Every structure is written in C-alpha cells, then in structure tokens.
Length: 365
Image (tube, rainbow, N blue to C red; front, side):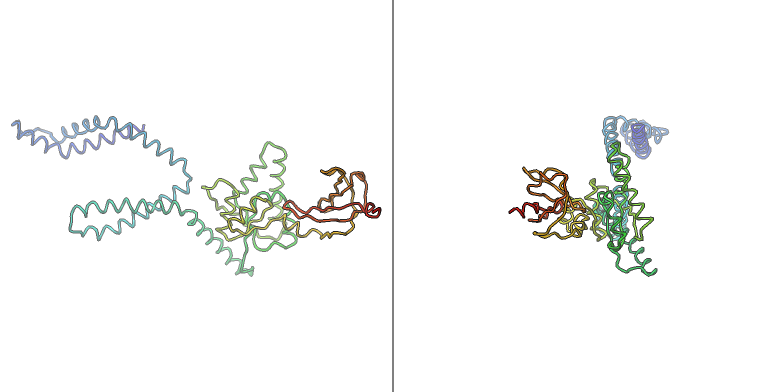
C-alpha cells in the first residue's frame, strides 16, 4: 500500500511537470523538425512526464519505501512524550524561522534571499526539536512544580503550614510497613509523595506468581490504604514519570531532585545512591537503630540463649527489639534464661550487635 502511494505521488509530480513544461518542449521540437504545433500538447506532455518519472524512480521508490518504514518503526518505539515535545519544539522553531523571513527577503542578492530562508527553516526546526526533546524533563517539572505550588497555596489559604516538605516513599519502605506506625506517632511532617511508577511496581509484585512476593505486594497496598484512610497525613499521588529512565530507584532520585524532597527508604543501596547524588534521605533502619535502648559494657541482661553461634562454644540470644547478642561460652545454656554481662557493642550497617558472657562465668573468675 505504501509503495503504491509513493508511486502515485511520482506519477502526479511527473504529470504536473509534463503538463507545465510539455508545450515548451514540443514547441522546440516542432521548430527544429518543422512539424508544427502538436494538438493537446499539454495533456500529451502530462502523460509522457508521468511515465518518464515513474520509470526513472522505479528503483529509488523501493529505497524510499524502506526508509519510510524504518522511520515508522523508530517513531513507534519512541515514548509519546518524546514525540510530543519534539513536535512542539519543531513547530516553535519553524515559527521563529518564519518571523526571520521578513528582513531576509529584503536582501538585494536574489540567490541569498531565496536560499537563506530554507537554511534558516531547517536550522531553527532542528534546534527547536533537539532542545525540546532534551529538556523535556525540566519542562515537565516546571508544570509539575507549578501544580504543586498551587496545591501549596490552597493549603495556606486553608490554614495549613506554609512550608511543605515532600517525603517520597520507595517500594521497600511501603512493603516494610513501619512507615505507617511512624506517621501515626506524628514524627513525619509534610506530605507523603507516592509516585505512580512505585504503585505500578507494587501492583506487579502483588500479581506475582510467587506466593511470598504476592503477599509482600498486597501488604504494601494495604499499608498505603491505611495511611490514606486512617491516618491524618497528606498523601500526594504524582503522575510524573521519567520514561527515559528504566530503574525505579533512579526515577526516585530524579523525582526527589525535581521536587526538592526527601526519599524515605530502608534500602541500603538506594541510601548510598541518594548520598552520592546529593539527595536527602530518611532511612527507616537508621531511625530504628537510633531509638533502640542503649546498652553499655558491664551492664547485666537477662536473656534466653536460643541457638549456636558461628564460633565454637558461642550462643546467640535476642533482645525484644531484635538486637542480636553473641554470648561467649553460651552454647551449653541453649534453651535456658541466664544473666549475661555486656562486654562490647558493635554498630554495623545491618544494625547493632552485642557481645556478652555469662554472669556465672564472671563470678567463677
């Protein structure tokens, strides 16, 4: 179908050229060959021109059709935002070029006055397309920030706080669930921002064939419903997306930069990425470690040794908050409650670890 359209185009162009210039050609031939005027020379010229151009463009037509189909495939693979912003930039560039035509047409050199507008049209169209395509995220952020500012002003009129801090939630902290308890205590100020691409990831996890992943995804969705319906916290669902970025963590970092907000997470890797990118981050695990009770060396704890340690003779116990206690020589007390004396406390990225020894052993020494 496309090939026939291109062939029809060349036929019409050839017919038009033959209709316009055919009489002149026949007049020149008639003058040189002395056969006089040819009746209906316009129509004969149109037929001859259409046939000649059709034959000449037989091979280029296949190449042109292949090029058009490749261009079509490339365009269909592009995100719709790229196409829209690129088209807008192209139109704006052509409008600017049109405004420049007026002074150019007054140039006294005819060849320059004819070719320069074409060159400026191509140049302005190209620059407009490239600028709009490469700056699309910033353009979208301007509209997004404007919308958020309107919401902010509306809140100020209603007596809300003038400075709203945006806390952007990632998937891991939603599934974890502790963010709901923290919001309930009132320690989280400002508005919670939940991007749609995070909701899509949660939906994908909730629809997983793996039972564990499915339960985690459904738990995350339940936590969001609880925050929205039961807690007195402002929740913003933002549609802003960055289609040129595939990773969800990278999208969160980009969104935090655009909104000037803070990422709330318990993902160690995302925490490091945010620090490298200069984005403020609130780590739930850091908060949990910070509010754990302080245990000092020499303090006596009453614990139950429940399993072997990694080293020979060690036993392992846990505090109520989940802090692991490694008891030297505690293997023989597995299953029993004993008093232990804290010897040292080790703070790691995974949490706090306490080393202790049985108090009975201390008395024996």
